[in-house]
Image (cartoon, rainbow, N blue to C red):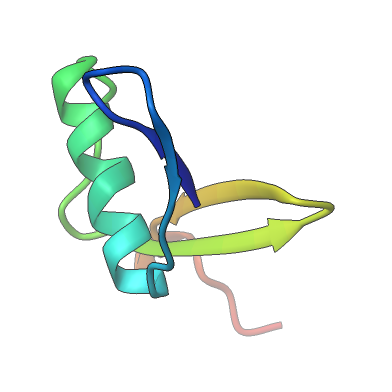
Length: 65
């Protein structure tokens, strides 16, 4: 991950999945994007891009067919 410091310098750091999820959740909170506390949160890296996924499993919608 690359980040910009306050003085405009760009630095590269490595983060594990849980740290990236935490950063994305904090960004969502600051920008007022709803985040469910009960959702399963995952991060995927594809073609150099980050994908953040939140999913809820509602047992009332499950079927046993």
